[in-house]
Image 1 (cartoon, rainbow over the protein chains, first blue to last red):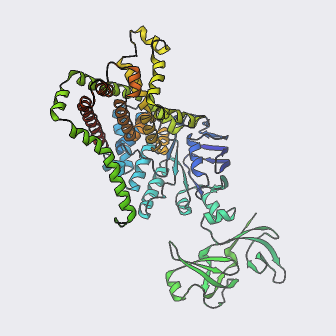
Image 2: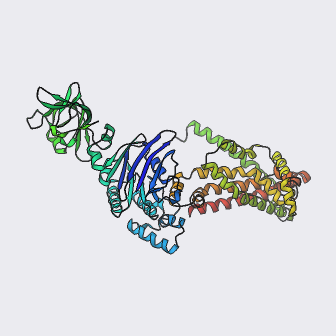
Image 3: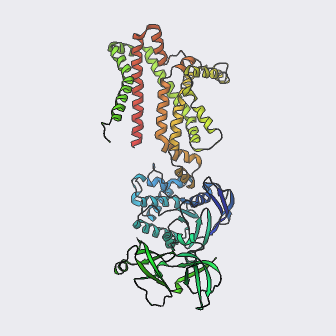
Length: 352
Length: 260
């Protein structure tokens, strides 16, 4: 179990402030944050490459805050792999074993085993300069795993590989985790977090702003920043009020805009979120069970990973995900006036 | 870009003039020297001994001082410490001070009355007039070339690779010998070659420490002073040839190493 308690570090351009979290044995823990949030520095502190100013780090009950780098049992895979360019793949994987003065016969067996696990047996005699990004990533993983680290730290492991390789590597990481390897993984990509993590910490400007189970964080983002980072775009500050005239609850977004919603709260400030795939677009006002109907103007049409994202101005910007055929059938274009509808049950209120 | 632009033409002409400035005196010297004089001088035992002495003392100085200079260069490249800029400036001092003045300074350091001189005399060695003294003088003026090249080489090694090695359980010394040194080797080798070549060509500092035994630059000076230009030319040509040969061989060796 890895525990960080109030880790702080003052650096020239930013600070890490009171970072605390707990990673259980066997967890796949993802730290999600924008570039420059301090994720890599945090990793280097855990690995002992940078000293912290205050705070403590525990691994399996042992305080490793001041432990030598070489004795920490923390394996770090760098973002750009840091595979030694002057050594063959075989020598790269054997490097940590030689550092530990393991017998050469054992080194040979272990290197072959790791290469087999990472599907790089055919690359053992190659030089890193001749390998692709995905292959280098596997070499870096094999090399770090040779140490049998208690915790594997992965710094943006999928950021510089193409989509096909990303899927392959994700499945490799999942497999590793299923075998019991505790993994802490940093990324700025929420899809990566969803597909791999069982726990997530969101980092902003050197602090952890939300930490919890993946599902909880994605369903209940604590702030607009977390919502944006977790891919939720329709996230607005709101106050719950009772519309006495119609005997219903409304989320007041601004003076002229409110959403109908289902909630137990009243007179409470917070945020509302609406999933972009739960909003309907029509050319004319339609009568349905949806009681939130707004006329708006299409600001932007953006091709998304799956489908098309339509940004509509209804007083606030609303992101809506539709299919290619809907775009075609409704003849949507930027500047067109359309209607958007969503159910009160699609508006989720998160109190402050 | 158009090669015939006025700037390119002017730059090329200026370049040709600079090249002529370097090559013309050397070619002139070769043309003015009869081949028979070169052949006869090359058979002169004094000349042969002098050239070997120059090569060996400079080689010895380079190897001996590299042991301390290379780790020092690593510190200059990697560590932050007080007075680092001042120390970097001190390293380059031998380049800017007159070499005869450097020789006087080194003489005070290695003479019989100095601590080092007294210590050496216990083993029956007197640095003044001794090949070791010559090596010390050569090293004094040439070591900045090695330190600067090695430091630049270490700066060029990505810090991340060293961090990765530490994380992979290597001790700092293992990181130095297995990661930093091999990756900076190209620059270090260039530095070693430069130090060696600079040491071989040193006159000012060496002549103060040891007029005898004569290294080649001192022998050339001596022949010029005693017999004139005609006698100094053949020795100069032979020494330039040997220096060029050594330089080319070392460059080729370093290139071969790089290609491996």
